[in-house]
Amino acid sequence: MAELKKTLGTLRLTFYGVGTIVGGGIYTVIGAAAGQAGMDI
Image 1: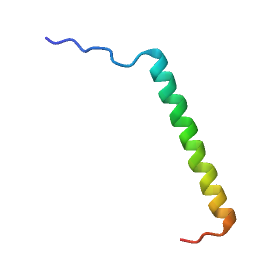
Image 2: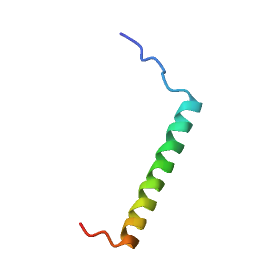
Image 3: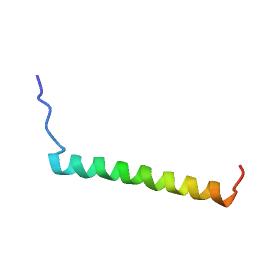
Image 4: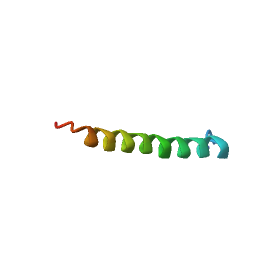
């Protein structure tokens, strides 16, 4: 039976998690700014 190989280390997994959180925050700020600007869709 083939064994699975570990491809993501702790450092890369940490950077991935932080990047996901920061990216979500950016979309939240853009959405709030668009609401303040009065953009109606």
